[in-house]
Image 1 (tube, rainbow, N blue to C red):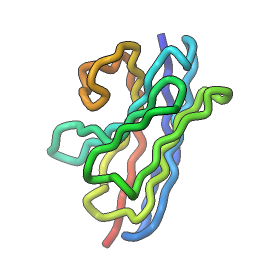
Image 2 (image 1 turned 30 degrees about the horizontal axis):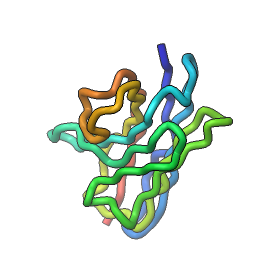
Image 3 (image 1 turned 180 degrees about the vertical axis):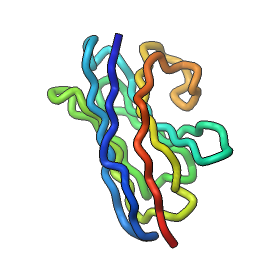
Image 4 (image 1 turned 60 degrees about the vertical axis):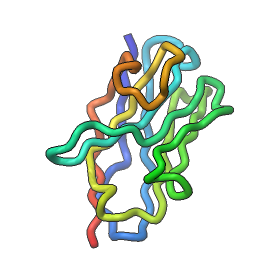
Length: 124
């Protein structure tokens, strides 16, 4: 079992920045590719970014490329999402997730464990 706890959400004006953190506990952190997803009210959960076990490979949704950066600190069992140039359409609950397999990093069904989410609200 892996427990994931997100933090860092909040209210920010358009153009601002936030840094989300996700602390993992339980099984060996480096066994898992990590991902960030978001879910806006009334919408499906969507892929935002993912990072490989070593941190050497990253993947992004087109909507966040150039604005968001995913990183991980394996010594701290933590994955981060640096969010810059935020837009009102980025408003959502953001979830981190852990994937023990090697499939499509953007597919929610590939992820074994999920956090409870942290809310990001971007005002215009």
